[in-house]
Length: 162
Image (tube, rainbow, N blue to C red; front, side, top):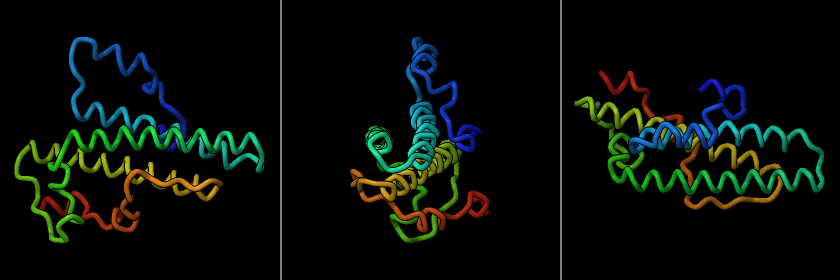
């Protein structure tokens, strides 16, 4: 999370780090999501570079690369979501518009944690795309992202445990 604030890739973003420890065992669903999250500070770094340049060919090239990288991450995030399946909606009150029951087991609490990380990834990805789209060429996401307002209205974890 430190690297989100620094707006730069972490040392864990390397191919070696993502593959070497996993030679003997398969990555968990959480490990796969962490890999996706670990790519997002690089998007922020690229966005900062684009915003720091005057309009011109170099800026347009960097902006195009940013949009392409966002698209790659979006595809990966959507594949992760499909792999998790409908369980991801267990703690998504926007799908039912009803209050959600708190987690009643360690497994459900872990699912809530994954769901929160997923929404953090979505919020960061689509807000970066929004800022990038304001810098130049428009981008059409694979799916309609939820609004930042809806995400901000998600009940905090403390409210779920009452």
